[in-house]
Image (cartoon, rainbow, N blue to C red; front, side):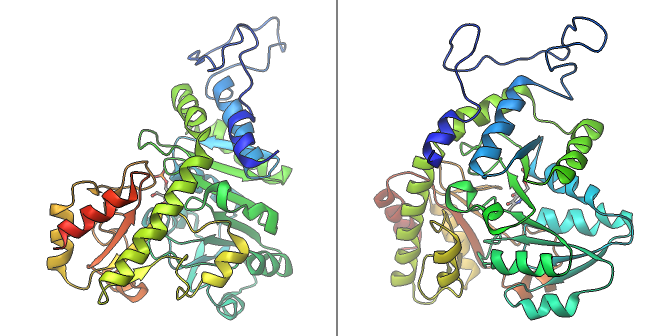
Length: 377
Ligand SMILES: Cc1ncc(COP(=O)(O)O)c(C=O)c1O
């Protein structure tokens, strides 16, 4: 089946009892069992829930994987993969990454005495140089938040296989609609479903998808033992929202392409980051490993005055943490999504104080352009 069909139908069969097209929400914390050791596959809400099971089937299908495991947030999903590491293991991570991932690895994961090397994975020679005898995992985010740098998924897989590493890719920005890291041989795909998969700025969630049973078992154990699980209502919201993933992503992609071009052509002093622009260093790779360029455009305005004007005067672009809702949003990465990254490191990457990450919504693009125009007049 195609992904638009799968998004609507995988895990989304009508309710067996009533035929209801919208599944009922199973709020039960516990389930009656027939006799000792005999039940209908559900015992306790933290461990299993029908809405969560449906969501997990849906995301596994969309990501072309065998197993989907749902968490209560993207960072809880990221944290769960540290269970694949032993104390003293070394992890190679891409430098240019979501600030919360940076914080998680540098604080909580470090308590496990993990050794971390943050490098620019635009060049795999850096990965070769970073390799140690105890290297166990390579972690990438592509395109990256907020600079939209790309990492070659095939090279990541080759490097991981040659060196017996677990490869992990955060696919939040592309969603399975535009990119399927598992098909390149990546071992673990991560998502913040608080972003495009949820898509309406009304749910927080995280997902892990893998084809490897050994990995699934470990992550499933964390899900049960730590219990950072999404509520039945959040699972239901996810399933309702994911049905329109294809049409939303097409529109995000279309609008973002127009906005990127608009900035490029009308504000020559601004630096525009968008993988759909031919001058973007990842443009050729983007065409190879993605089926679209996504809905995020980052723009370095160069002057704080212009940043402040845009934030204050724009009516449709709301200043907000997060991204990927149907409504357009703007994020000041330096003080918001990437505040936990030290200033020197941020600036060395290009996350300057004058950079705005623009999450282009699915409004009429003419209205969005008119809004930018009036705010920067
Ligand atoms: C790329 C990426 N991964 C993970 C996360 C964390 O997800 P959550 O906020 O759902 O915990 C985010 C949040 O912004 C993100 O942008």
